[in-house]
Image: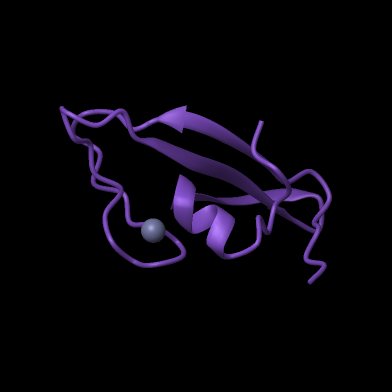
Length: 73
Ligand SMILES: [Zn+2]
């Protein structure tokens, strides 16, 4: 699957306390857990060269959907 879009980048970040963002892959919240050092993938999505939106993924989900924005840095 090639959905490579110019300018779109994905990065890995720790999940922050209070985060309630829904995962773009599974729809469940990307929740902070005190006992687990979870990471999320944040993708700044560009459409036609213009910033369009931010998508959040559980790190596992991002792998599952085949890393649509490339490997997360
Ligand atoms: Zn998910």
